[in-house]
Length: 172
Image 1 (cartoon, one colour):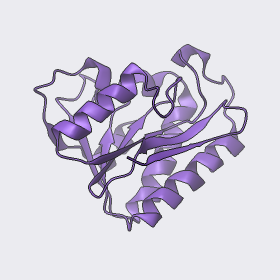
Image 2 (cartoon, helix red, strand yellow):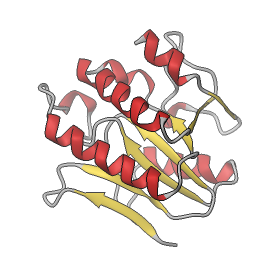
Image 3 (cartoon, one colour):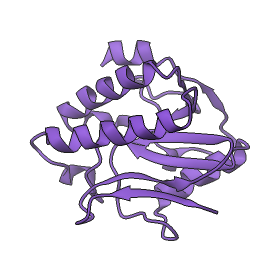
Image 4 (cartoon, one colour):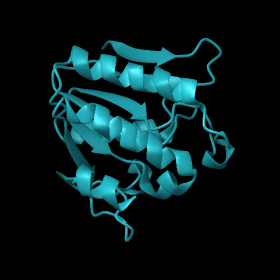
């Protein structure tokens, strides 16, 4: 297995973490925690299980904001535009290298409301990925406010279903 892993040199931000595959699933969370190759945290272990259960041989964890923070309350209070742009560049490089049309799991839960700038980051990501014709999906039913569920809080029996990203972005 070949690991995909990009981060900043001081490890304060991570852009990608995953395993290369022929049938690849991307997953977007809010922000990375401590996970690294061969040392996955519970969220990334859940993403790996979801990918395996749905017949993907590769998966890559991406995030709406790349700052490492074990607790979302520790996210930057002020938006770091340079960090966001590095994340956008990393996302585009990854998707472009795979020819677009990738299945993307929306998996950030209600944490999108933790900081106002997270919604704007997601809007930027959505606009970027529209040109690559990616397919957004979620697992299980959406929350009462329409957010896709975080992978830690899903039953194993939940299935992949389409996620209307355009409608979701308009509702933010």
